[in-house]
Length: 241
Image 1 (cartoon, rainbow, N blue to C red):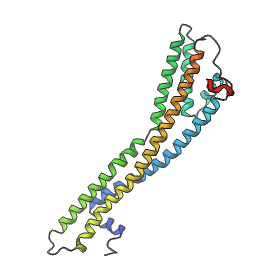
Image 2 (image 1 turned 180 degrees about the vertical axis):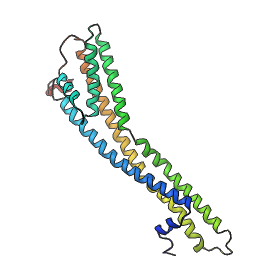
Image 3 (image 1 turned 120 degrees about the vertical axis):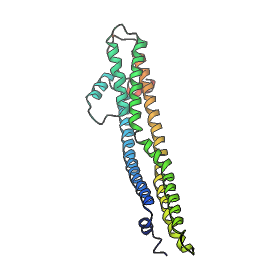
Image 4 (image 1 turned 60 degrees about the horizontal axis):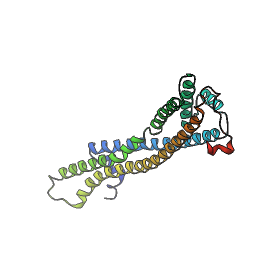
């Protein structure tokens, strides 16, 4: 009986429907783990790039120089840097129109940054819904396999004259393996989803705070539409920006 109840034997002896459910769940589990590792690496890279750009931004560099350097980059661009470039690009474009007042300058820059922020958040949140789906659906798929397996096991026992625990146990055990695999796929996905959702909220708050701080800098410079490009305050006074 011990030999009959090992996991490999239970999987190979399960009905075709239960085996299909197990294969589906194993595929989903492997895919979710690939998404988890990719997301861990991606979010870590985003946080590092954002922190690097934010330190550069508050270092006191001329904003026109910072914008020019950002526009020349083809890769390794932080999401926060793309938000900055979108706002600065719109600000400079509108400033060339001498009839534009300071309020229109600031509103245009804010709209551009808000649109860029939404695009960045869409990329940051990509594949997060997949983990949520795996976490919520996998147990039910496994439960379906278990119900089908138990039904198949009892159907096979219908013609037996004498039913003992030894004849019932293998069929039920085969069916329960599907639920176990479903939980194996769901639990890591739920844990990872909650972790990533919290990290993404922090990244979003950081970028929104930067956007508001940069908007304040543009507001102080938008009154002089014909002046030179706005410059960053010295690093020692960066808190006042």
